[in-house]
Length: 374
Image (cartoon, rainbow, N blue to C red; front, side, top):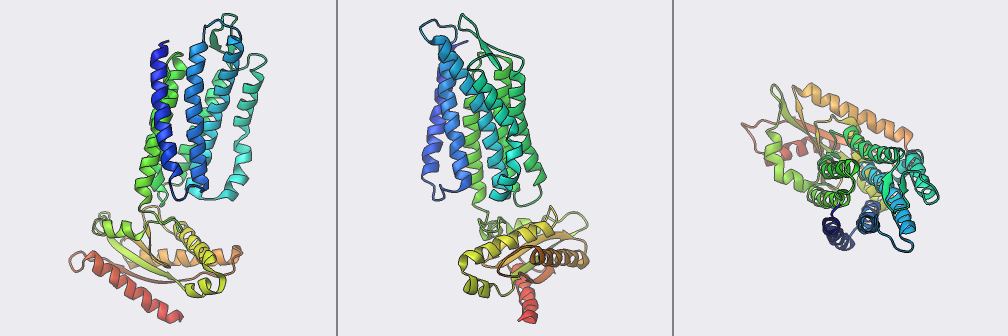
């Protein structure tokens, strides 16, 4: 065990976390649930770097109270390890589903392994559960420590499974940052699990958190916060490329949608309810479309779907699914409004029109359909 190397490594981790803490404190939406969870992970990481360094510093040392300090600090490490992993899974879930109701429903059960490990850490203050501190004040793990490590990996793997479940929808903007940031965590934790005396896990976590922060910030520039769909900036920047990405034997097509009588929802129920209607519309469109379809909130209550099709019949199937999902929403959701969409669509011809012209034509087709509603 090289104490100097451990101190340097964890000092780097603390420095990274402090930098991230300062940047998150200056964000506009710092009181969002996801931001609070993220800052909670930062705080745990910083404390883990400090406490882990302390446990290595007192290991094998002999002074009054050294053994008690070693027991208390190592018990804290086990409790904080599982706490971080659990909070991480909650964070990923919320970023994917944006639902506090889902968290309240699912996570009391999912929290059971974490609660058991934390109880074991508390009991370890009085008798060996996950580790033993000898009379010589030397740390060693018990067989039950593997259960603590297993529970930690359960939450990390569970978060990856959540991302996999939500693949193919707009939430894929989080999948790459989550997947990439997990790599250092797995490498560092495995190294520390098999070779005691190596201190890599928490600096690896700090590196992962900065990768996550940077990745999500860059990706979120293209995500509409209300609907969860791509925004107009994403469309403007990528329209030509998106229209050229049809699969072999298929054509690129677009559907323009507009929420019927949206102004009356805003005027009659207020803008907060109008925002909820936009969010509901985004959920309906995600549920009704295919995994490779690209969903965009174009402007206000207007949306665009870009898709690959063989013929117009496939487009009509998508519009029929949207109508069916909308009817299902109106029947099952208790909202002070009912949703419906006017829709227009067209198959893109790269020989005859530019991206701008194509958007204008599907917009005209949508307004032709809207005039039937008015």
